Each structure stands twice: as C-alpha cells, then as structure tokens.
Length: 211
Image (cartoon, rainbow, N blue to C red; front, side, top):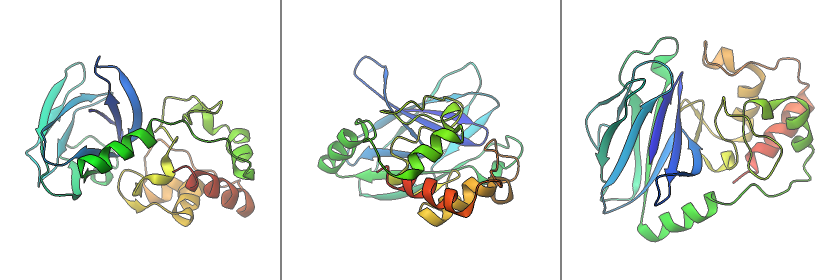
C-alpha cells in the first residue's frame, strides 16, 4: 500500500505485484488481519508524519524520499491514525483510519474497489459534471479524471469525509460541498455556496450511492 501525504489529506493506492497502482482510495487504509503489511510513505508537498498509535510508531513523509512502515493487525477493527508532524493550516484535522478485515473479507473488499463506478441515472451525476467537479476528482467509469483531489469512485463506502473529521453520509456530504471552508478552514476544496438546496441534495445522493 502506498500512502502519500497531501495538504491536508491522505492519498492511498493499492499496488499490484509489479508495484503499479491498481486501486486509488483516500483517507483510509484497508488491510487483512494476521499478516504484515508494508506501507510506502511519500509526501506530495511538505513534511508529514503518519502515526497509527495502536499499530506502530511515527514515520516521517519527506518530499523526494520514500520511507516504509510495517504494520500488522491481528484483530478485525478500526484503528485511528493522525498526521504527527505540523504541516501548516488544518494540520490537526488530518486524520486517517486503518480498517482491518479478515483475509476473506479483505479479498471481497478489494475486488469491489477494483471495479469502476456503475453508470448512474441519478440527477446528481449530471450536477457533478456540470459543476466541474471532475477537474479535481476522478470517478472511474465516467469522464471525471481529475487528480488534484481524492478519487471518488467508491466514496460512498468510506467511513469519513474531510480526512477523518466527519462521518460519511448524505447530510455531511452536502454540508462539505456547500462550505468545506467553514468545516476545515484552509483546505483545498473550494466551497460552493451558489449551489441550490436541490443541487446539493442531488449531488450528495449521487456520491453517497458510489459504494
């Protein structure tokens, strides 16, 4: 697994046997229980540090350098992580979770995550495109191919929004889209106060459906 620290979220990639990125995710790391997992750590901008207290110590993420962290969870569950190096702005709101599955459940999760998003007839799919969200975000299986922000192909399956600061549901998604700067000041997601209530409802319903 490759985790890249960004201002102020975590880009997560699952690698194939050749070391190529096979699946993109964000702000959570899924692992099988009972076996060691090596995490490649990189930074896209400034120095970050990944700390998952119940699974290991702090390891720095330094621009231009790749460090490694080995973790192992023997019990299924959710393990909280945090950026442990001040990286400016909303550093304190840069969280991450590690979700440990049984090996069988992990295989099911990974196979599902490898699939593109299904075609959607929900009106929010058109709202997403019209608002220009695809310039920053990717949804595999659609025309959205932006790389600046988190991959949203399966965003509805994630536990949190905003790098661990909100539970992920349709209401919090609408609030985040409408005014993310009020929730996490300084983050790089622009607010969209001009969206109508109906547009926010539509787009959040669409994103919540992406499991």
